[in-house]
Image (tube, rainbow, N blue to C red; front, side):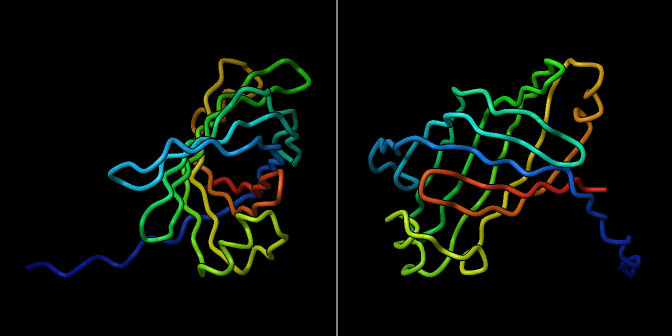
Length: 159
């Protein structure tokens, strides 16, 4: 058996943008084999940061699995539109979990400090607009917080 090589340096992170997405009423599809299946409509919002500024086009959705272990799997799919008219598809897959009492407060729409629970997503982008085509090769991670009617994500590009 050969020895493991030393690890490569950790990937760097560069701040990309902040996503502030307004959300509609949660719709439950009921229990399923993997947990409760839910969907939350994405109503619009803003995106602002050093590398990406625009608005969230209404019509996206956040598909969720409320798992039996208390974790929430998130698969959001939406479009960002920039002032130049670029349309950028976003796929954001993540996980939110924490102590049951904290998650109950979130479910009631109460303000909960982001450090009280785990909320992270992995993001990919797709666009045909020349000014933003570099996003097609970006992988990003985000730290999130859930507010009563909004989700806020601070997005970091992996380097």
